[in-house]
Length: 489
Image (cartoon, rainbow, N blue to C red):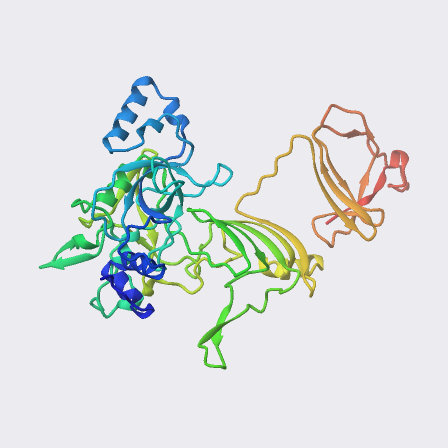
């Protein structure tokens, strides 16, 4: 009879390595097909390799193409006829049967489910959902996306799904394991065990039907796609319920959300015995505060970075692979309870490496930490009700134009502009009631000049200012003239 369990048993079944199989059986119980070989809606596959660029094969020599197809054939790929016509982001996958693969499943090419307009990340060793257009004809399958796993396993950079069966990672089943056992960031195919100091994998919990415990390690080192991967520690990003977040594998994120400078909320005690509940951050605006936040390089301080750990092989050595003629150590984000950080991955306008922000309403100077400078030097301050703002912050910023660049401020007294022309001129244009100040907002020195005369391109010349005994200068003509729109400090 199929095993039944309540929700309280769920972490324990994960730690025993059989939760996926039992979930599948419970699903069949609910629809009344227990004991019937009913077709799945989605199938779990392990990614053997990823073919990101079909041109790499097409541009190869006949010998190279032949060698690659021969290698793929050696993997037992059932639909090898597609080898020379694969769409971009095709994967080579092998079917897994829940958490136990009791029969051999051959590898096959799997096309991306989504069209080329939307290309999702996928890496060797990860598990993906796969579906078929027909339950009878499975010659062409479509991979949907990476399988989301429990919080102490899931990783935006790379997820090793069999760790869900490792009780040293499982927050709810510490009683199953030795309390002093620390999580081991290794790549076993299932639940680890130990006898007389020697560690092994319980075969009945293995995700793959093989005696090779280094199956996943080889995918991370020997596959073509792994040589293009950067394995690194990437802080988790937590979004608010109404946000749309697009997160890359290597610490990039685009968020269509609201004004935010820290956590999604501060957790406080509930007065009605609901435990902790969210209390929205007070310095964020609530209404009319839509924001598009594009960030690369979160977690630049210990407060927001999380814990970086080094993945290791089953032998205990750091896992390495060759990439761009160098050896890179596999790094990842710590996932055990002791390694979690409350502010991990939260927006940090001061320290995040690069940010482009489009905000409907925010206190931009305060959030950037420049309000005191602007108030003291220029008497510029945030509005109490917030301002629309566009922010660009990074180590170096480049704006390159082929024709011209123009900065315009539409003020109460007219437009002020700075123009960089393609002919090489730089034009500063104050409004009718404004002046150009060089050196600071308190610039007060008038500039004595004379009328320019034609000179070589890129150079300005003028006649000398002639001083006559007792004569005044700056009145015009040979005595020179003071500039009327420029002040110096």
